Image (cartoon, rainbow, N blue to C red; front, side, top):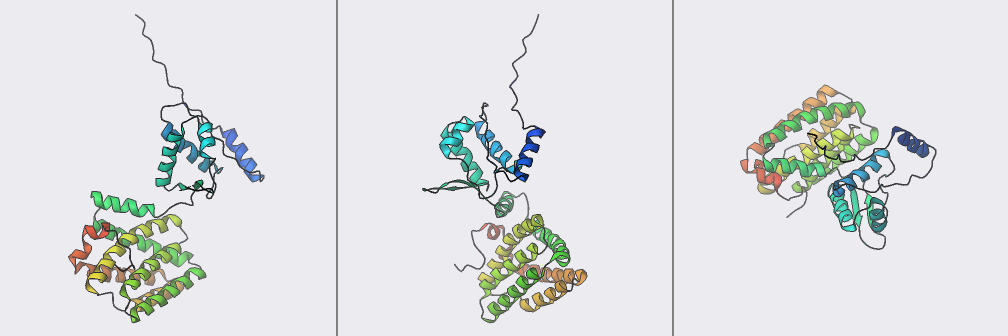
Length: 287
């Protein structure tokens, strides 16, 4: 008895390596790149649209700031309804890939990339219990060890000047009793230090860990009016070691400071509670 084999779903053709080389050659020659979208013939139209647009990004045809074709034209190229297209574009907007703008000059624009999305992921993981506050604090110490080492090796004069200006603002805020503003200075200090590594991936990780940690510091300062003593002085000592490219001294000073901050926070269990990390508060903004 013979059996009939079920028809196989045709696979979507991929761009050949020759096409990729031709596109790369055209870009190198200065020819303007125009995104080309093939019609979609599968049931997974929503996912396919997102994949096609990401494919154009990977090829370099679409770049940050570029505008996608008009909605009607893009839907026609892809062979989908405008409702399905809108759903896909909204998904890419939520993913930080697109910026949707209304009005006469509106449209769908490719974004530079939203690194703050990592903060949302970290907060969600805390909320779900996937990671703990203890793990977050431990990770911050080890990540900062790496950040300090790389900053000692890669910091440019402009990075050092920006850190010095931050320390001066920290000192002024301290003398004027603006402790919540000083928390914002601290957040900026770690952002500048991470940028001084010259590594964008490490800077993104550092920013995400710091953003949540500063919520704990903000809560402590806001509730008790107590802040870390001699902060500007400690910052100047660290900056001096950084300027000298003294890895051991800079790492030791940073570790000592982080331990002091942790002890200050642990004196107030409420400041280290999970709801503080998940609360919708912004360091430096008075409520």
